Length: 97
Image (cartoon, rainbow, N blue to C red; front, side, top):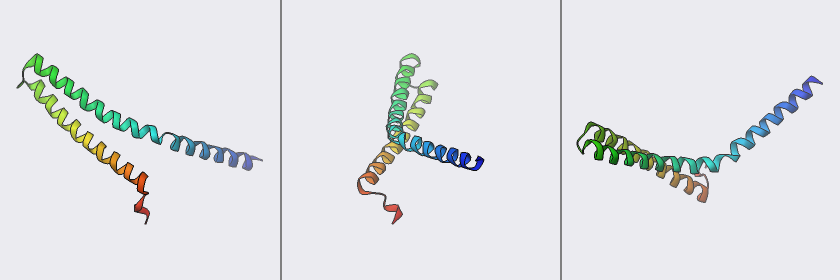
């Protein structure tokens, strides 16, 4: 009796876990892209604000220029990953061959 109950619980947990894992994948793709763009927009905004408040050559403006540069690099990585993901969805995953 105990063994069959444990087996059912394990099977139910595995099925539910698999469903939740695959159900959230499309949302994660869109969220990654939105997060990358949001970060770039935020750093550009902060850079503009710091230039207006403290001057173009201020320490604050320099900091936000650096942050914007890192955000742009991260957005480029997101773009490459997005294109790679689209290619795999269109052509299939060729890594398995």
